[in-house]
Structures are given as C-alpha cells and as structure tokens.
Image 1 (tube, each protein chain N blue to C red):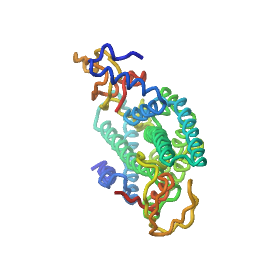
Image 2 (tube, helix red, strand yellow):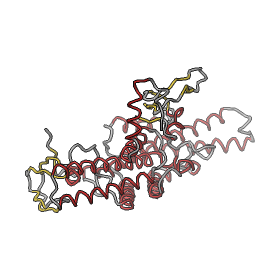
Image 3 (cartoon, chains in turn orange, purple):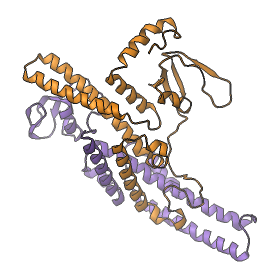
Length: 225
Length: 197
C-alpha cells in the first residue's frame, strides 16, 4: 500500500508509512473496527474472521503467560503480556457490546431491512430474534392489547399507515468525525445541491454527515474517530 | 384537551434523571387507555353516521369527517405516547441487564410493573445466552483497562473465594490488590470499591 506518500502533503508521508505498517496487525484492525462501530450511527458489517483471529490470539497469549508463570519468568514481562491481553480483550468485548446495544436499540428496523440483517453474526441474529420476541411481548402486554383493534400493530401507528411508521431508525444524517486514510480527491459531501466539493487529503479530519461518507467507511478509505 | 394526559406521561419520563426509573404510573396510564377507548367510540359513531348519510369520506369534507379525523389522530398520538413511555422505560431496563445480572435489587424492582419485570427477566436471559454462545463475558471490562491489577476495598463480607490467580480471603474492610477482571463483578454488585490514587 503505497498510499498517500505521493499525493499527501510532504510532512505526512513518513507517518503514513508508519501507520500502514502498524495497521497490518490484528490488534490495530480490531481497534479500527471498534472505533468505527462506536462512532457509526448504524450497525456495520460484522468482522467475523477478525474476531475469530483475535480470540485465537488472546487464547494463545494466555497460554504463553501461563507458561511464563510456571517457568518463573520475570514478573514484569508477564505483567506486560497480561496488560496486552487485557487491552485486546477490552477492545473485543467493547466491540461486541456496542453492536449488541445497537441491536437492542434498532431491533425492529434491523429485522425488516435485509441489508442490515445480513451484517449480523449468527449469534447476533439469534440475539436479535430473541430480543424482538421479548420486546414485542412486553409492548403487547403493556400497551397494544389495550388499544382498539385497528391500532394494535407494533410497527404501524394504525392500519391506515402504508409504511411502518412506529419503527425507530438510526439517524444516518448525523454528523460524525472522520479521518481520511489516503488522498481521496474532491468529494461531493453535500446533497443539498450546493456545489461544495471537498478536497480530502490523507490524515485530514472532518466532521461530515454519516450518510455522505458511508461507502468510504465500508471500503476502509475513511476511519471514524 | 385531547392527548394532554398522554403527553404528561411522556413528560414524566423525560423529567426523571436519565438512566433512572421512577415508579410506573399505572394510574395515568390507565386513564390514557380509557381516553383511547373514548376516542374509538366517538370515531365509530361518526363513521356510522357518515355511512348512514351515505357520504363518501373521500369526497365529502364536512364537520363529521374532520371530527372523525381528530379522534383518529388523537388516538394515534396517544398510542405513540404510550409506546414511547413503555419503550423508553424498556431501554433503561435493557441497560440494567448489562450492569446487574439476573436479580434486580428491590428498590428498582418495586418501580416496575409486572410486564416490565418479565421483560427484564427475558431480556437478561437473552443477553446471557448470547454470552454463553460466545463463551465470553461481556458484562465485565466496561472501562478501558490501565493496569491488570487494581487496589480495592471490600465493603461487605464475601469470604474465601478462588480467583483466577489466587485464593483470597475477602473479609470486610480488607484492602487487596486483585486482578481487575476478578474484582469487577464484585464492584458492580456493590460489594467492593476501587481505591484510586
């Protein structure tokens, strides 16, 4: 990846190379996915192989630490390894947790949008299904059964509504802070019709509407911070 | 005025501290439901009247038509308010599922209605089943770790416990140096506190 070095302003190029170098480790990839997931208003594609690899690595490191302890290795070394495990574990847990919290919040929306539904892992789909059952039952018990017949749906306000207008959706036009990974050229960031293309250089930080940069995040050209 | 009670219900939720629940307002809730039934009766009466008069509700725009519309819209508004009330409370309950496992402390439990209690039970079971599918406890590690070990003070007598790296006697008031992951569960249950600085 010889990105940025040519197009970017000279001062950044050394840093770019360094960044691309370290971003090849799984820990860094995990950190990126975690940050993106935290900052994005909607749920992103589940990084199944990355999660799988991270878990294997954690297990491997745990075994190493145990071996070190048995062999009476320097406690400082052990402690450093342990810290590394803890950090990776935190990233992993927080990543999964953030996703579950999004599922909890937007479960009905995710369920009816096939594109979003396929972004979930198998376990997350199971979780979402059960959550939806629980929530539906709860809403029905507390409110819906007590309402008149034509107003009983949990997705629609009444039978007259043509669309599901009772479903909470993520705000895709919310502003997010993002950093470009490489030179992206000018970008039409405003759909208001105004001519306002933005020159995006590597390492620049912008506050933009999530909707307008969504494809760039999915392809990894842009990171959320 | 139509819809005022439902609005009160939502306002009551909004005015409570975020993340905190106040007692489920059964009284007001029932009143709003009653109001909904009232609207339906009047709505049906108007619709019947329009049918008898043979007027088509696409073309005739008379007083009855708009009367019916007002009742319909009030009903929908009430429904939205009721749903918002229940749903927002349910979100708080979802969050509880992350911090406390399975058993609700009494002071929270008495604020929920029966369906909410059931929801909490179901939802935290759902969460637990996800975690056991993954074989990973997500309820610990809520803040980024700085050090693998933290200093804690034991607030309630816990007794002898096997921790991941040692056998510890967690007597009341004891100050110990524990693995953060071990200590976190006790901290979230209020049995320990972290000593900082």
